[in-house]
Length: 59
Image 1 (cartoon, rainbow, N blue to C red):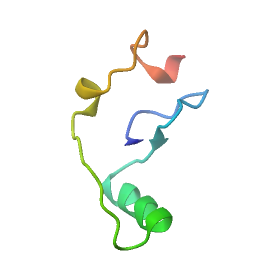
Image 2: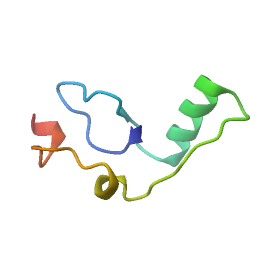
Image 3: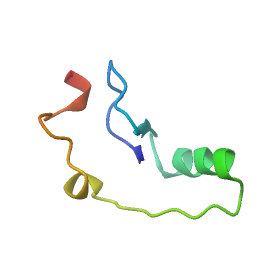
Image 4: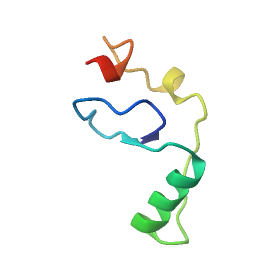
């Protein structure tokens, strides 16, 4: 999962930080090539909430 959440002191499993859409696209192309497929969830925090954490960067 790619997110614009602030970088946490400790890494959150399965989440990579991207500052913007272009950074996310570049990371996907680098990892999967130009023919990648992705699911975009603009408000993914509502779909995949991080339990017991208000702000992951404070963890």
